[in-house]
Length: 234
Image (cartoon, rainbow, N blue to C red; front, side, top):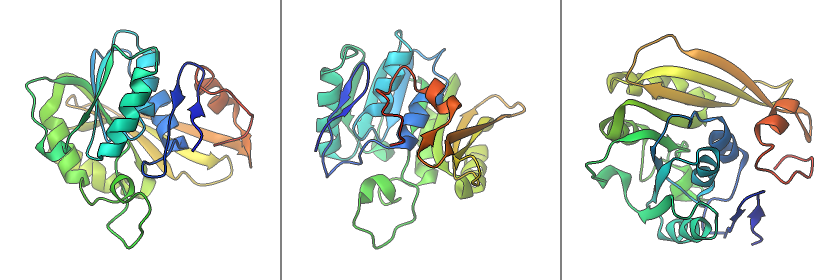
């Protein structure tokens, strides 16, 4: 499988690890990383989100974990081949059992969001088989620093469930970005940002394509420092 090439780094991929997709690019580009010094990515896959964060914030140190040994191998290869190799470390970990004395300023994840089903495609990355929302949120609330941010991208129909679990773990919605695939469509994804500080949530809207297969101006602007554009969506 050919590598996916960005301006400052390449992403090696294979059939056994969830490939580069628009959700990961959006999360890596939209997440608030400006105040982060220590970042934990849960479910790193190819490592694209961690690499984007490292490019955006030159002060950040990142630990990227995944339960899939092949994903850890690929992400670590991508980290080592990047200009940010001294600031990102990949590690095989089951997040449910992950223990550390460190607290993180940002915990970020593109989590499995399908209920367990019969599909054989990207089971660990797509289905809540090894990591469900409750486990992800509960452990994140224990590892997040006092002023830290917990940021995810999930389907819009999971918002109520996800936010209720966060609330039960003293995490409050701080920012919501509703994402439309095409300008005329309904939103299908949300980037959600939570913190321990209760406040009125900032609500934003984002459009990927202004018409089929034509990027919106806001998507082009958001990703201008990453993509080597062909002018067509992923």
